[in-house]
Length: 637
Image (cartoon, rainbow, N blue to C red):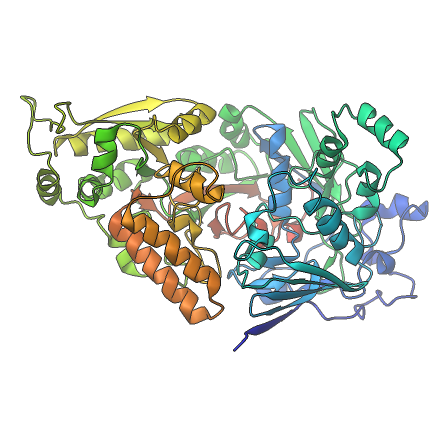
């Protein structure tokens, strides 16, 4: 039976006080920040800036206080590339997750999903881009036909998320406010990827972007634009001007709560409220409450120091748990508050044996599950937790967290107990029984069993953990040597098989639901450092890399394909369970601790920032699911 799911957004017509169309807007509903533009008739009244059915955020029902307009907040970022944080945290998506990780329409008024094959999207009538142009089916058509399917703009083919069994959908414009995507097979990735931190782009501001497209612009005018913006080709110009994830073009219309007003390069980026944003609170106030978010670019190494010196009103990036005591102490000097949120990674740091290592001896050993298990249970996670994390983290394998509906205690405990005696027996059985005079094991080829663990050198935390692991592995006859490098070099060496073992974060999404893709448990990407060559093979559809030759890794890919084909929730959950069991038992990554803590500092005057939350890139979009557009200043700091 085909499963049909219908998701409705806010179906409240503009019956909120002062918002009925044709009625003079109440002054209290207009943000004072916009008054000058309203008096100059440079903007329409609020009733004409909002969609006919805006999304109503009932803050009281969420246990939070409705706010009021006004104020700026400052944030510190490590580079101008971090303007993308505004897209991630603004979290305006066609569909998005709530705090319990349920999907809801957001920019869309509603949508239906029939058997995860047919997706029908209803656009909010009267919804506008930040430049005042209307959002309609034409913006979806432009993105699909003129960008995604354009061979100049989409070299390398369609994104995997837009393919089901290798085939793209049929796109239809049903009417001005309705579009439909129909695949020949289920595509369960579609909705979650629209809700992702870096979402797939299926809608673009057509009216603005057509001026940069060969199909819609006069050749002479297009040539002049290419020269004006110093591009090599019209496709480079279009790509540059349309980049929405990293909003560097101040003229690009957006649907986000704040829009960038600063062109790079700059040491400060000012994001101002989008006067056409589609959300309102229960009192009819248009969100966001805050007028401006100011990003100040600083050296990454001193962000924590500047934060503790009162130079940020909302900070979560560039600071870590090691900064917590210093930041907490700043509460006595500045009007700030520091909370600890729970990180969502499967493990804050993980050891990743490279199953694709170019070293034949170590590759064979790492592909032996007895070796991976021995290295894991030789680690004293309790000691590391107490020494590095003050006992506040959870000792665990690299696995999902209890906050996930898929969690089972066996995933956390799989081969994560401290048992050096069993570790020694497993290594003996794996052919490493011989030792040298210093007690270190010898490889079958006569070399000493020394594992070089490489890191990107971005955190002292990694070194602190590895120094303890060095002592633990010495007890089982394994020598550990730490090598640091830079991120780009680090990843290139991993792909070339030159890295024996790396330290990186664990599973990206430690709070998955059955509707989310379990690809992180299988070799699906070259950034998975335990099997980058196998991951590249999957990512490139067999054009690069090599296919996995380890039966358990092959089985994970097969299970992933099973998940993609089913539309029944119980079957999806069953696939997740099988993959989690297999991944945990095979110890493809060696987790240390999870549920670690992330400091979140905020101005003492900033309201509606939760004291506790789940903090991670995917799926919570850092602060995104907690709706920063609803944060407000009780008085300007």
